[in-house]
Image (tube, rainbow, N blue to C red; front, side, top):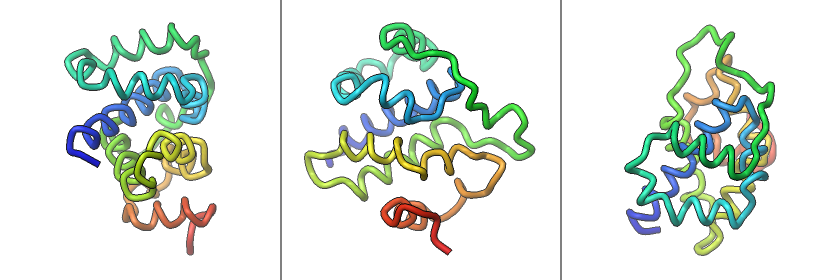
Length: 147
């Protein structure tokens, strides 16, 4: 993956996290709403959208893809410091970089965001986000949290 591609995936993953938080949806809902073509479009537009606020892009994406308001809120009642949406976006982009076969990054993004690990990462009442990224990657690959 080139540095530009890494930056674009970081942006896209951060955007997915931002939209998920704002609309109170599991991240898989966002990924499924956009679909592979929509994700590819957002990835293609990432270089330009870097110049816009996440709020503006979120509003445009939410309206265009008709993403409904959900009830998956892991932030309001959280007792701990919540990692920023960009911190989470970085984690996802590293997982994609490490897990995806060349040319299959979008499919891996969809798989990761649609897997159990995404809900686990989004549960900010635990310390899972702070675990070693390798632990998260291998848990994802095994389909369960490792002991």
